[in-house]
Image (cartoon, rainbow, N blue to C red; front, side):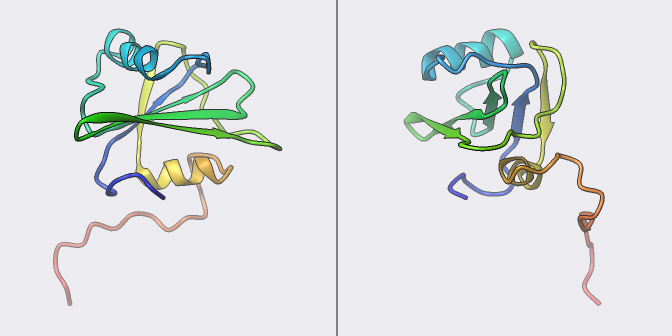
Length: 118
């Protein structure tokens, strides 16, 4: 994928978002609605009510990036939640979501945080 490194935080807006919103409107939503900093290097992910369109807002050095994805068939497996709620997910979960999979994969290998090498 084209988004920075794997250490970047990813926030999902749980409820539906109006896809007519542009960079400025989404940045205001991040700051005012979710009390987060739109100028951080985090990814802020939004989905429409039909769950077939997605926007990702992120800040990079001296400007915003706005990624837009429209599915011709199918829907994103978007988590249910309140409109004014953001949830933190991993980059791995974002990749699953973009691939049409649910956020919680029961068959995926669990993350291992090794401290030493044998």
